[in-house]
Each structure stands twice: as structure tokens, then as C-alpha cells.
View 1 (tube, rainbow, N blue to C red):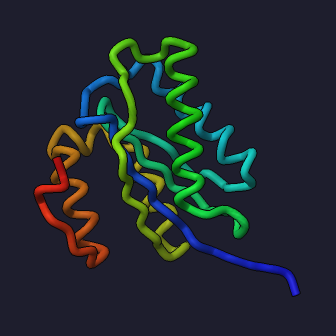
View 2: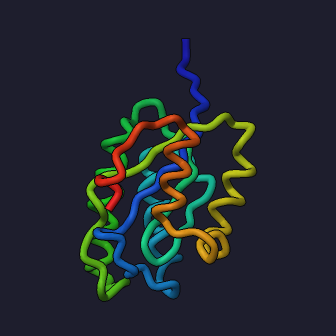
Length: 148
């Protein structure tokens, strides 16, 4: 029997200390690079977006890929790429942790729109506020002191 999965993830992580270092003009290059990493790992990226201090990805993971390994690979490779190509001069690193939330495939279009509209969304809400909302929406217990 073949393996079939349909697990839609929204993955979120920020720059170290939520530094506002991902300047708009080079974000597309970063997103394209991350898309390439996902493609090479047989994951399907539906949407990627973000603002100066964090990014969101809506993706399906290939069944052979562990989420934590994928995030580690994306962070390491994209950090090297950012520095090698001098994409964001003030970028130092990604934050240590990440958020990964699963959704029904029925939520795909809504998630894609949400990620596409990150700049508009963050005119009204900070990353911290958004992240706390996601944690609460998914019933994840957390301690505020660890949310920088």
C-alpha cells in the first residue's frame, strides 16, 4: 500500500529578538530560496509571506520529512544564503523556536490569503499579538515570558 497524507501546516518563525531586518525589497528572493528548499525535499509550498520580523509558510510536508528537521534545514540554509548574497544587511539570525500549526485542507484558501496579506494584517497587529492568537486558537499552553 502507498502512503497518503494531507496535512496542511502553517509554519511561523521570526528573526532573532524580533529584529526588523527583513527589508521588503529582498524578501521575494528569500521566499524563492525557501521555496527551493521545500521543493527539493518534496514538500508542496502553497504560500510564503511575511514582514520585517517574521515569515509564514503554508505547506504540505512529504511523509518522509520530519517537521523539526525541515525547519532546521530552512533556517540554516536561508541564513547562509542571506549572508552570502547580502540580502539583509542587519540580519543576524532566526529565532530559536518556531510555531507549526495544522489545518484541514478546507482551510487552504483562507490560509493562503492570510499569508498573502501579512503586510496589511500587521498594520493592525504585532507579531506577538498574532502569535498568541495562533497559540490560543490551537489550544497550545504557553508561558508569556518565553514569547520575548
